Image 1: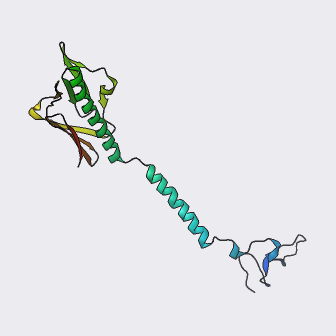
Image 2 (image 1 turned 180 degrees about the vertical axis):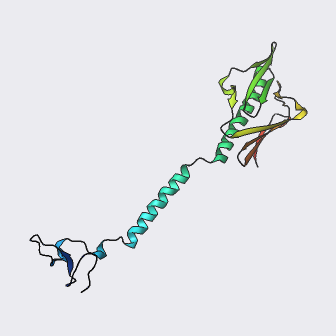
Image 3 (image 1 turned 30 degrees about the horizontal axis):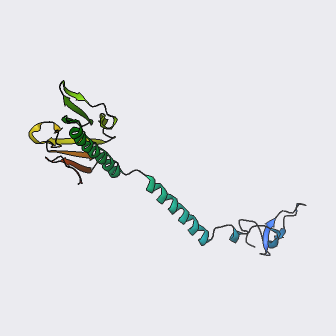
Length: 182
């Protein structure tokens, strides 16, 4: 007579157990609430439901991860907006506005009777590039980027890089600021 993992069950109708009185051949009927070996696993439908839930959770996590390209794009849009604000400020105030750009960040200054002075306006306060962002600057004639009182600018190209992503912010001689993703 074969012995299974759940004991010796000659009748095949239940599980071999020890009775409360110590009888080793006691067989419990199936309808007594005991789980048989076929009832111990998961159905295919249950497994598929769990897989769908895991897939949805993974998609939600991946969707919330920051993308370095979007951070670089945000940084370039912020920089371009500040350049436009500097151009507009030069026209409104009647003072030339200079932009100093380096690998760590950028700042704005205004030329008045006392020479170049940093701008106190919050929108044009010195700004550090976001983590991992660096800048390569090419200003025509090697001079600083300057917006004059009519909005005309020194042509310049500023390449922002983060990892393998590049964005080019360009300022033409008319003071028009453009963003080009490469």
